Length: 363
Ligand SMILES: Nc1nc2c(ncn2[C@@H]2O[C@H](COP(=O)(O)OP(=O)(O)OP(=O)(O)O)[C@@H](O)[C@H]2O)c(=O)[nH]1
Ligand SMILES: [Zn+2]
Image (cartoon, rainbow, N blue to C red; front, side):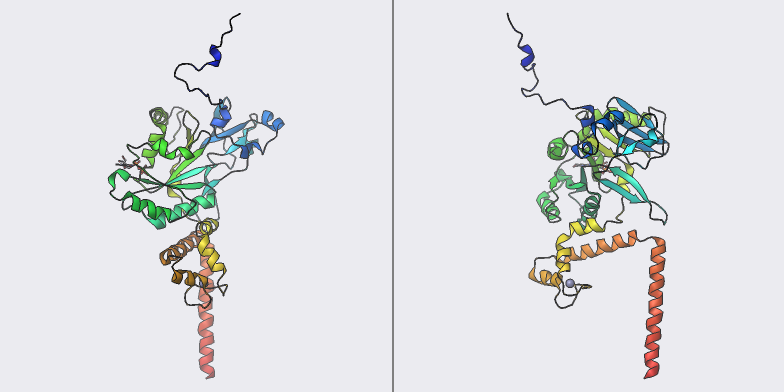
């Protein structure tokens, strides 16, 4: 008997070691973090779906063999995972988020707009030119830390710069937890440079000011697929208005790419933990100062000053930390809180003036 071994042999042109096939859910970014929140019975009853678009009129969700709209009513962000209740979609269960970008809603109340959930990596993009600004990079990185998303600094336009290494080195001083990549986003090997963070099942997003090359990077990642993707968006195949939609696109391999206008307007607010995380060296020193309310100015026993004098802490960095923390406090305060503080301050001034006058009178 002659057995047919051909099935064990690689077909022409395919690699010898075929990678295991990924499930539809894996390709949508299903990870152990989510799987451990569900038991098998629930999984079959309420299959997981990922939110790929959020509109005023509802959300688009995708799962294994499912791609459709659900009505509004759930507090969800693009990137969220739901245990889908097909009969009563608004009774779907929201799974715990790995990460969340949110934004202060307009108005005065402490209300948030959810921008994107379950992003794994955010590329903080700037260029090797006058756009490069350490304080701005720190702002974006503090935001990423606050949102529990791992940041990577991408320096574009390396092809137009004579001294790329200087930019790379300066970016590397920001945090030893943030990798730095310099690249020509237009003609370089973008997929290769970013591959460590772009495995199938991962979800990525981009932060950066206008013109630094975010779209160029996204186009490079999608390659020839992009034409089809943007074609659907522009034609608005389902007859909906999609310009302000928050969308999550997937490459054929299963990399989730978040393309949402809101990401570009992210403010620094409620980012105290993220800032403390990025400047943990300064915070640690400040905690060792002799006085709890040390202003790190001329106080005796100030560890921050001592570090500056010893050359282990950069004075400019301390100043940037102060500014960032102040910006965060300012944005975090509601208008009512600000008024109350100003009123308190006004009262204090009055009291101080009174006391002062009283003292004068006694003399
Ligand atoms: N030479 C060169 N040009 C680049 C590079 N990256 C981006 N560009 C160019 O810079 C311009 C702006 O790039 P975009 O990708 O549109 O920038 P963006 O960050 O998406 O800008 P917004 O959409 O306004 O937020 C385009 O003309 C790109 O071709 C690069 O690495 N090298
Ligand atoms: Zn101090």
